[in-house]
Amino acid sequence: MSSFPAKRISAAVLALSAIAITGAASAQENVLNLYSARHYQTDEQLYTGFTRQTGIRINRIEADDNALFERLKTEGKSSPADVILMVDAARLWRAEAEGLFQPVQSKLLKERIPANLHGGDEGRGAQWFGLSTRARIIVYNKVSVKPEDVSTYESLADPKNRKKVCTRSGSHPYMLSLIGAMVHRSGEAATEKWAQGMVSNFARPPRGGDTDQIKSVASGECGVTLANSYYYARMLRSTKAEDREAMNKVGFIWPNQQTSGTHINVSGGAVARNAPHRDAAIKFLEYLASDQAQGYFADGNNEWPAVPTVVVKNPAIESMGKFKAENVPIGAIGRNQIAAQKILDRVGYK
Image (cartoon, rainbow, N blue to C red; front, side, top):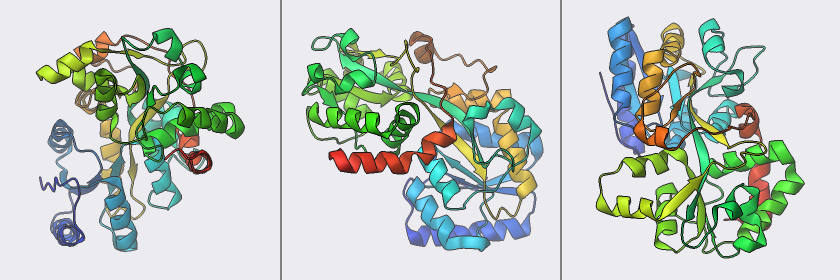
């Protein structure tokens, strides 16, 4: 298996790896060219499992989403990419909107992956599929914040939480997806009012990633924050003394359990627009919906399988308990990101 595991790949390296992939494709047609924004060691089990089952070898390019977008647009019709994996509904929708995917008609994917986790026009075939899910939870400081005061996303904008709220940048795809879901549920006017309240309640300007937010809540710099569930579970599983100490100081909430449910996002995949090995690409996506692959996909990053019948044994996730999830179509979340960004710009949510 060829692997290019750099998180950020320079234009020169991308160009060289393109030559390597193109050469491999012409020399051996029993191959799949994968462009992935996922960077988890456990995904190796996915790739070796597929090759073992099918005999199809995987050539892999790993880079962040923006690098993959630029690469695919530069390559155009000559792109060797067969399958594209990305880690957020906003990013998947952007790739769909830019014409980087193609419709897929697959009875197996249609039956295995719930309809609300399909992106694109179902009449012509979905253009992308959620393959694992994660929740956007609320994390609070046990000393300075009462859980009943931060039980919903909307409550974070309440004046009683003034100077307590921290988040990462509002323009980050995780936040855009959450706000896109709020636009779908509540409309733009209500969502803008919420965003303005969030800005008024900031303890500090948005910065850092989700792990940084959790640690800031533990330190007392912030009272409450938003984080993807897998970051919280990852810290629960950590053996580092400082992480264990931090987790003793924070609690978490499944938001909106009495109303719309907790916001869900996805890691998902699609067949590339100009895939030279289309049949192998569809076969790979179908493999990713299998029980075995769903277990690798989800447990390796402390997520949940997209296929509802698959059970994953993960002590950290199990300790967090059950919750009510929102049922907003994942495609609608992506489509609303433009409206979400305009709202953030108007209220000064950086």
